[in-house]
Image 1 (spheres, protein in one colour):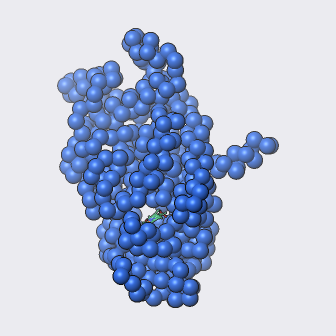
Image 2: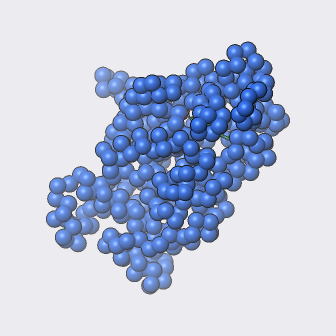
Image 3: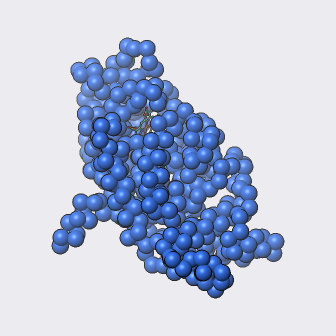
Length: 379
Ligand code: HEM
């Protein structure tokens, strides 16, 4: 990525601002001098393009400044001069290589899980990326991965997000080492690293998310409720803009990780290899006989043979609903097809709620896995 790339969102925003009335232009100029961004839109209100712009612009500038402060010893001197401040915005943008360093640090943390769960933080990190993106509402254009509002109360305390403090704390360690990255970029890059490092497909990704403020946190109830059926899935994922095929493709992520009694109330893993991305979730849905678990907990299914695997009611719906079942069968029959569709749907998921002009590059990057980077170095 060239240095110019980081300037693009700013330029796009300023271009849009040029078409605004004088009062607004004044605000833009203020932001360019690093004043506090004006207050954000109310969470559920239709996003006003100006308000979004103020925050986006302020945060992009703040991000650039943060990076500058991080990477330059002369930062304080630079701030004394307007001319040098211009330099902040133009010459110090993080490069693709900088983001690869962040990716590699996340990859290290994923593996450094000791006795935690199945020996990997990958699944919970992926879940953080998904829950921070899956709040998107295409009609009001609120929610999504842009502002990383799960950092704030009450979103961090929403029932659906129980346990994600573990992933957020891990990501905080990375943020301390790379303070210039926005939380939204960090968390979604974490999701990409989790999928790729657990042997999944490449997920194209690009930076550009900005840190939002508490008032932008999304209301409870936007994420799926595992006790529900097909209509609920279509409502929730339809609100994000996804169709049946994409709902099924995304659900295949449940090959990974497990349910925790103290987080969701459900218990157990979906597959025998919960730290490797495979199409086993779909194969098991068709190949095993699933029976309702007899226990004191919420309604979930278990495989009749070993009673060690589980399915949520929303997982089982994928083989009950005719339209969902058609796609689930295709993915059970072809891991290649699922990898292709999963990668595409996840890349879309992670960009929900991010205005296109905020991205620093028109084409998402493909980041090599840590192993591939090692191979490249050898050659
Ligand atoms: C289809 C609707 C979905 C429902 C109802 C659902 C529900 C759940 C529930 C109840 C858990 C267990 C949480 C816990 O107790 O720790 C879970 C875990 C998980 N979910 Fe989903 N989920 C859905 C879709 C997705 C999607 C789209 C993804 C990613 C693309 C995903 C990725 C994960 C992962 C990786 C875990 C394991 C987390 C861990 O091991 O800590 N889920 N999900």
